[in-house]
Length: 69
Image 1 (cartoon, rainbow, N blue to C red):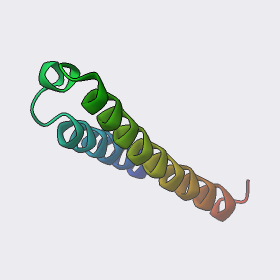
Image 2 (cartoon, one colour):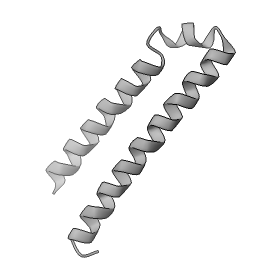
Image 3 (tube, rainbow, N blue to C red):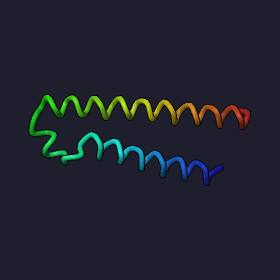
Image 4 (tube, one colour):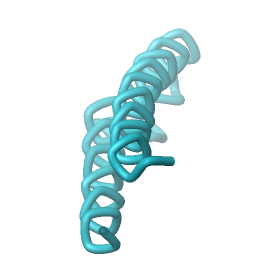
């Protein structure tokens, strides 16, 4: 079970990195040069993060139920 949690954590980190790279692909300094663009990019990243965390929490809940907790 610990191996799965470690793998899930590594996957979460990879996905977060991909989201941030996608959101700020031109570099954070470039995105922050235009406040409107920066706000939109941050909102997109937040929405993607929220979806990903919802998926992760759902998986943790599934594992909890499977273990009888």
